[in-house]
Length: 354
Image (cartoon, rainbow, N blue to C red; front, side):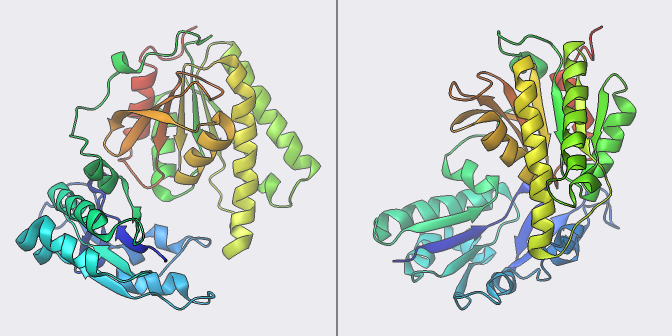
Protein backbone atom coordinates (compact mmCIF):
# COMPACT_ATOMS: atom_id res chain seq x y z
CA UNK A 1 0.00 0.00 0.00
CA UNK A 2 1.04 3.65 -0.38
CA UNK A 3 3.29 4.88 2.42
CA UNK A 4 2.29 7.49 4.94
CA UNK A 5 4.40 10.61 4.38
CA UNK A 6 6.00 12.52 7.27
CA UNK A 7 6.68 16.11 6.16
CA UNK A 8 9.30 17.69 8.44
CA UNK A 9 10.95 20.82 6.96
CA UNK A 10 12.32 22.18 10.27
CA UNK A 11 15.98 23.14 9.87
CA UNK A 12 17.41 25.38 12.57
CA UNK A 13 20.65 26.14 10.75
CA UNK A 14 18.70 27.38 7.74
CA UNK A 15 16.18 29.30 9.84
CA UNK A 16 13.27 27.03 8.88
CA UNK A 17 10.55 26.79 11.56
CA UNK A 18 7.04 25.32 11.52
CA UNK A 19 4.36 26.54 13.94
CA UNK A 20 0.64 25.84 13.61
CA UNK A 21 1.40 24.13 10.29
CA UNK A 22 2.73 27.48 9.00
CA UNK A 23 6.28 27.40 7.66
CA UNK A 24 8.56 30.37 8.38
CA UNK A 25 12.02 31.49 7.34
CA UNK A 26 13.99 33.26 10.07
CA UNK A 27 16.33 36.10 9.22
CA UNK A 28 19.71 36.68 10.89
CA UNK A 29 19.84 37.48 14.63
CA UNK A 30 18.78 41.06 15.26
CA UNK A 31 16.76 41.36 12.05
CA UNK A 32 13.50 41.63 14.00
CA UNK A 33 12.25 44.87 15.51
CA UNK A 34 12.90 43.71 19.07
CA UNK A 35 16.39 42.45 18.33
CA UNK A 36 15.29 38.88 17.63
CA UNK A 37 15.29 37.14 14.25
CA UNK A 38 12.60 38.33 11.85
CA UNK A 39 10.22 35.59 10.73
CA UNK A 40 8.89 35.64 7.17
CA UNK A 41 6.20 33.32 5.86
CA UNK A 42 7.82 30.90 3.42
CA UNK A 43 5.31 31.79 0.72
CA UNK A 44 6.49 35.42 0.83
CA UNK A 45 10.19 34.70 0.31
CA UNK A 46 12.19 34.83 -2.93
CA UNK A 47 12.33 31.03 -2.93
CA UNK A 48 8.54 30.91 -3.36
CA UNK A 49 8.85 33.03 -6.51
CA UNK A 50 11.04 30.51 -8.35
CA UNK A 51 9.42 30.02 -11.75
CA UNK A 52 10.14 26.31 -11.89
CA UNK A 53 9.69 25.28 -8.25
CA UNK A 54 7.61 28.19 -6.94
CA UNK A 55 4.61 28.10 -4.65
CA UNK A 56 2.28 30.53 -2.89
CA UNK A 57 1.22 28.69 0.26
CA UNK A 58 2.93 29.07 3.63
CA UNK A 59 0.49 26.67 5.27
CA UNK A 60 1.94 23.20 4.75
CA UNK A 61 -1.47 21.53 4.24
CA UNK A 62 -2.21 24.16 1.58
CA UNK A 63 1.26 23.63 0.10
CA UNK A 64 0.58 19.89 -0.22
CA UNK A 65 -2.70 20.64 -2.02
CA UNK A 66 -0.98 23.23 -4.24
CA UNK A 67 1.69 20.76 -5.33
CA UNK A 68 -0.99 18.19 -6.26
CA UNK A 69 -3.11 20.67 -8.22
CA UNK A 70 -3.55 19.62 -11.84
CA UNK A 71 -2.00 16.22 -11.19
CA UNK A 72 -3.49 12.81 -11.88
CA UNK A 73 -4.30 12.17 -8.22
CA UNK A 74 -6.40 14.18 -5.76
CA UNK A 75 -4.60 15.93 -2.87
CA UNK A 76 -3.98 13.54 0.03
CA UNK A 77 -5.37 13.85 3.51
CA UNK A 78 -3.13 15.96 5.77
CA UNK A 79 -2.80 15.50 9.52
CA UNK A 80 -0.61 17.40 11.96
CA UNK A 81 1.76 16.79 14.84
CA UNK A 82 1.33 20.10 16.65
CA UNK A 83 3.73 21.54 19.21
CA UNK A 84 1.33 20.77 22.05
CA UNK A 85 1.51 17.08 21.12
CA UNK A 86 5.30 17.17 20.76
CA UNK A 87 5.95 18.98 24.03
CA UNK A 88 3.04 17.75 26.09
CA UNK A 89 2.65 14.17 24.94
CA UNK A 90 6.22 13.35 23.94
CA UNK A 91 7.31 10.48 21.67
CA UNK A 92 4.42 8.23 22.69
CA UNK A 93 1.80 10.76 21.60
CA UNK A 94 3.65 11.35 18.33
CA UNK A 95 3.83 7.59 17.74
CA UNK A 96 0.10 7.18 18.31
CA UNK A 97 -0.74 9.94 15.86
CA UNK A 98 1.63 8.67 13.15
CA UNK A 99 0.59 5.04 13.66
CA UNK A 100 -3.04 5.95 13.12
CA UNK A 101 -2.40 7.84 9.87
CA UNK A 102 -3.81 6.01 6.82
CA UNK A 103 -1.88 5.15 3.64
CA UNK A 104 -0.91 8.13 1.43
CA UNK A 105 -1.73 10.54 4.25
CA UNK A 106 0.73 13.40 4.82
CA UNK A 107 1.63 14.09 8.45
CA UNK A 108 3.06 17.58 9.08
CA UNK A 109 5.62 17.81 11.89
CA UNK A 110 5.72 21.15 13.69
CA UNK A 111 9.03 22.14 15.32
CA UNK A 112 10.85 25.29 16.38
CA UNK A 113 13.82 23.78 18.24
CA UNK A 114 16.11 20.76 17.78
CA UNK A 115 14.57 19.01 20.79
CA UNK A 116 11.17 19.11 19.07
CA UNK A 117 12.62 17.18 16.16
CA UNK A 118 14.23 14.65 18.50
CA UNK A 119 10.77 13.93 19.94
CA UNK A 120 9.28 13.64 16.44
CA UNK A 121 12.05 11.29 15.29
CA UNK A 122 11.71 9.02 18.32
CA UNK A 123 7.93 8.95 17.97
CA UNK A 124 8.22 8.06 14.29
CA UNK A 125 10.67 5.27 15.13
CA UNK A 126 8.14 3.76 17.53
CA UNK A 127 5.45 4.17 14.85
CA UNK A 128 7.61 2.34 12.30
CA UNK A 129 7.94 -0.60 14.67
CA UNK A 130 4.22 -0.73 15.41
CA UNK A 131 3.12 -0.30 11.79
CA UNK A 132 5.41 -3.00 10.41
CA UNK A 133 6.87 -3.33 6.89
CA UNK A 134 3.47 -3.47 5.20
CA UNK A 135 2.56 0.03 6.43
CA UNK A 136 5.75 1.98 5.66
CA UNK A 137 6.59 5.59 6.41
CA UNK A 138 8.17 7.88 3.82
CA UNK A 139 10.04 10.96 5.04
CA UNK A 140 10.26 14.30 3.25
CA UNK A 141 12.49 16.33 5.50
CA UNK A 142 15.39 18.68 5.97
CA UNK A 143 18.61 17.50 7.58
CA UNK A 144 17.38 18.01 11.15
CA UNK A 145 15.17 14.91 11.09
CA UNK A 146 17.96 12.82 9.57
CA UNK A 147 20.38 13.77 12.36
CA UNK A 148 17.73 13.16 15.02
CA UNK A 149 16.66 9.84 13.49
CA UNK A 150 20.29 8.65 13.38
CA UNK A 151 20.95 9.91 16.94
CA UNK A 152 23.91 11.99 15.76
CA UNK A 153 24.94 14.34 18.59
CA UNK A 154 25.97 17.95 17.91
CA UNK A 155 29.69 18.44 17.35
CA UNK A 156 31.99 21.44 16.80
CA UNK A 157 32.38 22.91 13.34
CA UNK A 158 35.15 21.45 11.23
CA UNK A 159 38.47 23.23 10.96
CA UNK A 160 41.29 23.22 8.43
CA UNK A 161 43.19 20.46 10.25
CA UNK A 162 40.28 18.04 9.77
CA UNK A 163 39.93 18.84 6.08
CA UNK A 164 43.38 18.03 4.78
CA UNK A 165 43.44 17.18 1.06
CA UNK A 166 43.79 13.53 0.03
CA UNK A 167 47.36 12.32 -0.23
CA UNK A 168 46.99 11.99 -4.00
CA UNK A 169 46.06 15.65 -4.51
CA UNK A 170 48.31 17.08 -7.20
CA UNK A 171 47.80 20.68 -6.10
CA UNK A 172 46.86 22.60 -2.98
CA UNK A 173 44.38 24.66 -4.97
CA UNK A 174 40.69 23.82 -5.09
CA UNK A 175 37.52 24.50 -7.03
CA UNK A 176 34.38 26.39 -5.96
CA UNK A 177 31.27 26.03 -8.14
CA UNK A 178 28.36 28.46 -7.67
CA UNK A 179 25.30 27.51 -9.68
CA UNK A 180 22.57 28.88 -7.41
CA UNK A 181 21.19 32.24 -8.57
CA UNK A 182 19.00 33.15 -5.55
CA UNK A 183 19.71 36.47 -3.85
CA UNK A 184 21.46 34.90 -0.87
CA UNK A 185 23.86 32.98 -3.12
CA UNK A 186 24.59 36.05 -5.22
CA UNK A 187 25.36 38.08 -2.09
CA UNK A 188 27.66 35.33 -0.81
CA UNK A 189 29.42 35.16 -4.18
CA UNK A 190 29.95 38.93 -4.15
CA UNK A 191 31.59 38.77 -0.72
CA UNK A 192 33.73 35.82 -1.82
CA UNK A 193 35.01 37.70 -4.88
CA UNK A 194 35.63 40.83 -2.80
CA UNK A 195 37.41 39.18 0.12
CA UNK A 196 39.29 36.34 -1.60
CA UNK A 197 41.11 38.23 -4.33
CA UNK A 198 43.53 35.32 -4.80
CA UNK A 199 40.74 33.27 -6.36
CA UNK A 200 40.56 33.06 -10.14
CA UNK A 201 36.97 33.87 -11.15
CA UNK A 202 35.51 32.14 -14.21
CA UNK A 203 31.97 33.08 -15.24
CA UNK A 204 29.78 30.71 -17.24
CA UNK A 205 27.45 32.89 -19.31
CA UNK A 206 23.99 31.35 -18.92
CA UNK A 207 22.59 33.19 -21.94
CA UNK A 208 24.68 30.97 -24.23
CA UNK A 209 22.62 27.93 -23.14
CA UNK A 210 19.14 29.38 -23.62
CA UNK A 211 18.98 28.15 -27.22
CA UNK A 212 19.87 24.54 -26.52
CA UNK A 213 22.94 22.60 -27.69
CA UNK A 214 24.34 25.26 -29.97
CA UNK A 215 27.89 25.99 -31.10
CA UNK A 216 27.97 29.03 -28.84
CA UNK A 217 27.01 26.90 -25.84
CA UNK A 218 29.74 24.38 -26.63
CA UNK A 219 32.29 27.16 -27.09
CA UNK A 220 31.32 28.76 -23.78
CA UNK A 221 31.69 25.46 -21.97
CA UNK A 222 35.10 24.84 -23.55
CA UNK A 223 36.26 28.35 -22.66
CA UNK A 224 35.34 27.90 -19.01
CA UNK A 225 36.89 24.45 -18.81
CA UNK A 226 40.16 25.73 -20.27
CA UNK A 227 40.23 28.66 -17.84
CA UNK A 228 39.66 26.40 -14.83
CA UNK A 229 42.25 23.89 -16.02
CA UNK A 230 44.79 26.66 -16.57
CA UNK A 231 44.29 28.11 -13.08
CA UNK A 232 44.60 24.74 -11.34
CA UNK A 233 47.71 23.96 -13.38
CA UNK A 234 49.21 27.16 -11.93
CA UNK A 235 48.15 26.00 -8.44
CA UNK A 236 45.51 28.72 -8.12
CA UNK A 237 42.10 28.07 -6.61
CA UNK A 238 39.14 28.84 -8.85
CA UNK A 239 35.53 29.92 -8.45
CA UNK A 240 33.43 28.82 -11.42
CA UNK A 241 30.11 30.63 -11.25
CA UNK A 242 27.10 31.14 -13.46
CA UNK A 243 26.22 34.64 -14.60
CA UNK A 244 23.83 36.34 -12.21
CA UNK A 245 21.24 37.26 -14.86
CA UNK A 246 18.32 34.86 -14.40
CA UNK A 247 17.06 33.45 -17.69
CA UNK A 248 14.22 31.34 -16.43
CA UNK A 249 10.99 30.37 -18.11
CA UNK A 250 7.96 29.07 -16.27
CA UNK A 251 7.72 25.40 -15.32
CA UNK A 252 9.40 22.88 -17.60
CA UNK A 253 11.01 25.59 -19.73
CA UNK A 254 12.90 26.95 -16.75
CA UNK A 255 13.94 23.46 -15.73
CA UNK A 256 15.26 22.78 -19.23
CA UNK A 257 17.54 25.83 -19.28
CA UNK A 258 18.71 25.06 -15.75
CA UNK A 259 19.41 21.46 -16.73
CA UNK A 260 21.59 22.55 -19.65
CA UNK A 261 23.63 24.82 -17.40
CA UNK A 262 23.94 22.13 -14.72
CA UNK A 263 25.07 19.58 -17.30
CA UNK A 264 27.75 21.99 -18.51
CA UNK A 265 28.98 22.60 -14.97
CA UNK A 266 29.13 18.85 -14.34
CA UNK A 267 31.09 18.20 -17.52
CA UNK A 268 33.58 20.92 -16.60
CA UNK A 269 34.03 19.52 -13.09
CA UNK A 270 34.43 15.98 -14.44
CA UNK A 271 37.13 17.16 -16.83
CA UNK A 272 39.13 19.08 -14.22
CA UNK A 273 39.06 16.26 -11.65
CA UNK A 274 42.03 14.85 -13.55
CA UNK A 275 44.03 17.75 -12.07
CA UNK A 276 43.21 16.35 -8.59
CA UNK A 277 42.12 19.56 -6.85
CA UNK A 278 42.60 19.70 -3.10
CA UNK A 279 38.94 20.44 -2.35
CA UNK A 280 35.59 21.06 -4.03
CA UNK A 281 32.80 23.39 -2.90
CA UNK A 282 29.39 23.39 -4.63
CA UNK A 283 26.91 26.17 -3.90
CA UNK A 284 23.25 25.42 -4.63
CA UNK A 285 21.00 22.47 -3.86
CA UNK A 286 20.61 21.23 -7.43
CA UNK A 287 24.20 22.15 -8.27
CA UNK A 288 25.67 20.21 -5.34
CA UNK A 289 23.47 17.17 -5.99
CA UNK A 290 24.25 17.04 -9.72
CA UNK A 291 27.99 17.46 -9.17
CA UNK A 292 27.96 14.74 -6.51
CA UNK A 293 26.12 12.22 -8.67
CA UNK A 294 27.13 13.10 -12.23
CA UNK A 295 30.60 14.61 -11.91
CA UNK A 296 32.02 12.85 -8.86
CA UNK A 297 30.05 9.62 -9.19
CA UNK A 298 29.22 9.51 -5.49
CA UNK A 299 27.26 6.47 -4.37
CA UNK A 300 28.22 6.60 -0.72
CA UNK A 301 30.07 9.25 1.26
CA UNK A 302 31.25 9.82 4.80
CA UNK A 303 29.76 12.97 6.33
CA UNK A 304 32.60 14.55 8.29
CA UNK A 305 30.48 17.23 9.92
CA UNK A 306 29.58 20.86 9.25
CA UNK A 307 32.05 23.53 8.20
CA UNK A 308 29.56 26.34 8.96
CA UNK A 309 26.07 25.77 10.40
CA UNK A 310 23.90 23.86 7.93
CA UNK A 311 26.72 23.15 5.47
CA UNK A 312 28.08 19.57 5.57
CA UNK A 313 31.38 18.27 4.26
CA UNK A 314 31.55 14.84 2.64
CA UNK A 315 34.61 12.65 2.19
CA UNK A 316 34.25 11.05 -1.24
CA UNK A 317 34.37 7.25 -1.28
CA UNK A 318 36.63 4.91 -3.26
CA UNK A 319 34.02 4.42 -6.01
CA UNK A 320 34.14 8.10 -6.99
CA UNK A 321 36.33 9.92 -9.50
CA UNK A 322 38.06 11.69 -6.59
CA UNK A 323 38.55 9.25 -3.67
CA UNK A 324 39.22 11.03 -0.40
CA UNK A 325 38.29 14.47 -1.71
CA UNK A 326 36.62 16.85 0.77
CA UNK A 327 33.35 17.94 -0.86
CA UNK A 328 31.41 20.86 0.65
CA UNK A 329 27.66 20.67 -0.02
CA UNK A 330 26.44 24.26 0.41
CA UNK A 331 22.66 24.73 -0.12
CA UNK A 332 21.68 27.88 -1.98
CA UNK A 333 19.35 29.22 0.71
CA UNK A 334 21.63 28.66 3.72
CA UNK A 335 24.22 30.83 5.45
CA UNK A 336 25.11 34.45 6.05
CA UNK A 337 26.65 36.74 3.46
CA UNK A 338 30.20 35.97 4.55
CA UNK A 339 29.83 32.22 4.99
CA UNK A 340 30.92 31.15 1.50
CA UNK A 341 34.12 33.17 1.87
CA UNK A 342 34.61 31.70 5.33
CA UNK A 343 34.28 28.18 3.95
CA UNK A 344 36.82 28.83 1.20
CA UNK A 345 39.31 30.40 3.62
CA UNK A 346 38.97 27.33 5.84
CA UNK A 347 39.50 24.94 2.95
CA UNK A 348 42.43 26.96 1.56
CA UNK A 349 43.94 28.73 4.59
CA UNK A 350 47.11 29.64 2.69
CA UNK A 351 45.21 31.25 -0.16
CA UNK A 352 46.54 30.64 -3.63
CA UNK A 353 50.15 29.56 -3.48
CA UNK A 354 52.37 31.02 -6.13
